[in-house]
Picture 1 (cartoon, rainbow, N blue to C red):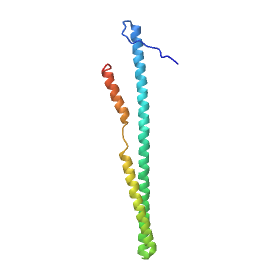
Picture 2 (cartoon, helix red, strand yellow):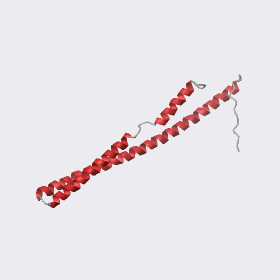
Picture 3 (cartoon, one colour):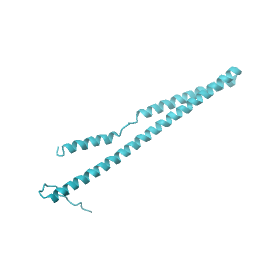
Picture 4 (cartoon, rainbow, N blue to C red):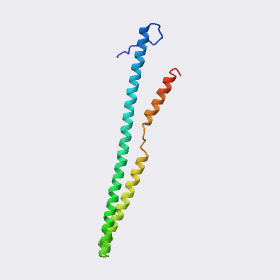
Length: 138
């Protein structure tokens, strides 16, 4: 079992102990700042992952929309050229792609609504730290 050395923070009048106290406070503030930066990095990474997934859904919706235009164009060509089964088949495939595009778009839109643009947890802890710094005893 390791023991943590106890540091007395009782006010003393000589300059050496004030310097030590200032050094301890500065060190603690640096540690706190580093921890807050790490927390912000983790939060930003999580939000970027969610945004990336939602962007992928938008990309899928764009591709599906492209396929709708392709098959609708084929359906129009086949339908106008020969009003036969081939044109209707292409129209059915285009309708399926339209449904897929709508579903992917909706999922992408829903995913983007859950993305928080700022690291909420870090902002909250920074507010608490600022409050504490103003009133360390209360």
